[in-house]
Length: 112
Image (cartoon, rainbow, N blue to C red; front, side, top):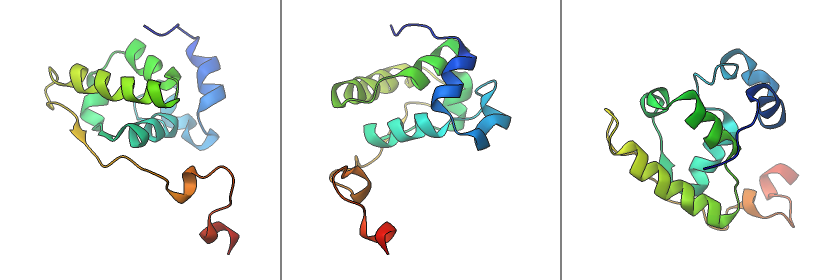
């Protein structure tokens, strides 16, 4: 289990300002969580998200994003969603060596 953080401070550190209208109560999936879902190759529906408790949503927002943690996230969400009414979260292709993952170079499309 991940450590608990005061929701306000966690939101201030991890969510974009433009998300403020819907992240105050985490009723929508923040971009920070969506990024982790993309890395994990998990399609989490809003229905899945809505069925999670606020504590679980905060834990997903605070979840680390190193490779081992992302793999643990994938496994956790597959297991956790299997009992939800929307069914188990679907797998997505996991990104590998995408331009946005290259920290040492600016993607060509941005350079242009």
